[in-house]
Length: 238
Image: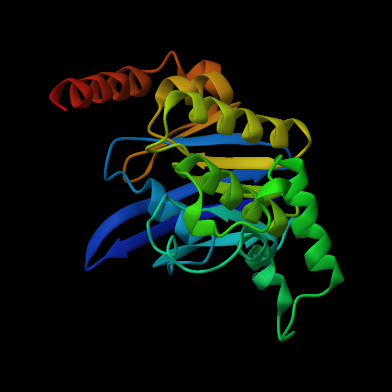
């Protein structure tokens, strides 16, 4: 069953085209990684799909889900780290999109937040201030926030950036488990090896779609070879 269909999506910034005529679909239970070089429009596409940035042309159709029922884990940011909110309150905030005109969270919202914390093994953190958590703990809590919002799809933008290898492996395992349990995953990643190992489909964009299909087929393409070479050169230069 198709959850979302993107057709000829074009997005511009200040007259510069960031994405041109991007077309692809997300099906129930999918595990898709969006890859491409720096500046290719990966995060832009994710924000357009979520309605966080306007499309210049094309359309996004929500067929098997609603936009308010998509979980979202953005790129790591220091914004909000010092805000005196508890972990429970942060996870509950994932339900804001479903609240509509309701002024308060209801019983279903609180149950969804408790369940998300439990599923991700973070229930013991519930009463701790979010700003006092480690980077890995914060990402786990923000993943729980996305899960509390999600009906059938979670979108993640570089969820392991800046985390150490052990924490990265643990977060990847949580994401993989959610996918095995039926949650569709759409993830922006700069880690091509991890994308090929974990995703079932690869969406390679560089202004437009360069490849969309099975991960094992993408691994054989020139696009994959070029991107791997670009990543290695960046690592050597860094």
